[in-house]
Length: 222
Length: 222
DNA sequence: TAATATTTTTAGACTCATCTAAATTTTTAA
DNA sequence: TTAAAAATTTAGATGAGTCTAAAAATATTA
Image 1 (cartoon, helix red, strand yellow):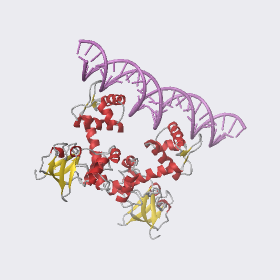
Image 2 (cartoon, each protein chain N blue to C red; image 1 turned 60 degrees about the vertical axis):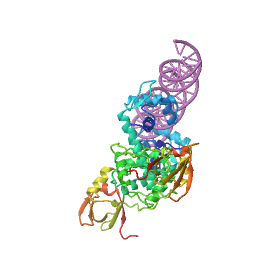
Image 3 (cartoon, rainbow over the protein chains, first blue to last red; image 1 turned 135 degrees about the vertical axis):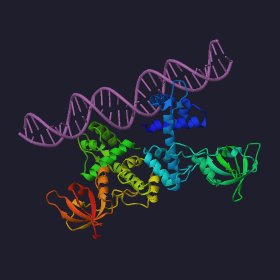
Image 4 (cartoon, chains in turn orange, purple, red, yellow; image 1 turned 45 degrees about the vertical axis):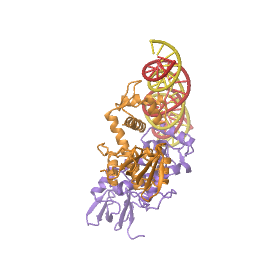
């Protein structure tokens, strides 16, 4: 049995290890969980006891296979619920995070699988993040960012890195959503900002920061 | 802010007061919550502190208006989620209780209302229990039980009192579900068992205990 | 109404998850 | 390579929710 709090720690540790490297430090976890380092230490001892992480004091933690399974299950539930909230209940993609944070802890494998089926086995959530299947396998997603694209290319927005409402609202104002097609006109050397054109022939500039938060797929390239 | 545990106590107290009379005793609450009387006392003090119940020691508790609002909100969510699980996800009516017990604590008024809308504003859940609307008002339901019906009457099953999987499975074997129409042939004086006939002309006997767990509406009577 | 039974509450302890403040270990950099 | 800085852990406390065992209050019944 894993408690709600334990599940949240495991999710944090798992995503930290994914995004950075192979281990997560106490301080990193504390920052991500918005808690104190001493609380993290306490929890790491408990998770180690339960064989959900490999932990030795003063050394960064690794997640065990058992712990990884829990983390992936939470992520699966989170993303399926986000999909449900947006596609079935008509929430905006900027409104679903906090609700999904709660729903991800509902415990019932059958519920998760029936929800998955009801939704038509979606591969990506409303932010373009891959949804693991019931075996825990993630679908492959292109990991190229808009900031890495060459001038002249045509591309499609397939995901966002930053999930904050402020960023998502900003994209909304620019008429950018998943599936939006853009053509990259110019890359300014000076600040790495980009000039892009959309399907309605609207031209606008995106800062390096914005571009590095957008996952894209080059058009006609597979 | 009400915690998950506080919400469960309030729900228990509210339903006890509904079903019995005007007040709930410590022991009754303990039984319903499957916990010890001393734990109940502790919780009643806390709920009283928060003005969710009116409590004086050694006296049975009453729920306040504030507490009632919380309880009704939990019941609303529970029943809407049950409806969703059965109607959208194809769960059986005997499988949804435990999952709904978890989902009822998800905190988002907007979610509840959007779910309600998505489901088409259902008035009754899969067990025939009334679903309060977003103002907390319950739809009216006939409260007559099968055990109170006179011989010769035609009736429709509109609800069950006992929600246990064993009872619901038993009904399933008898081909009884919500909406099932029956005609009451005979009432045996000896043990108050009933002989009924369904639409397919199958005749069977129902014990007093079963009959007193079925809510019905007399056919052609409104 | 007094004795007994039942119900309810208190006292004290436990677990989970958290905190602050102080101590320890590791890392960095002079 | 040693001193300072940073990261991490320990010690001790707190709050929510629970428990057992004992005490107190209320209800029952002879």
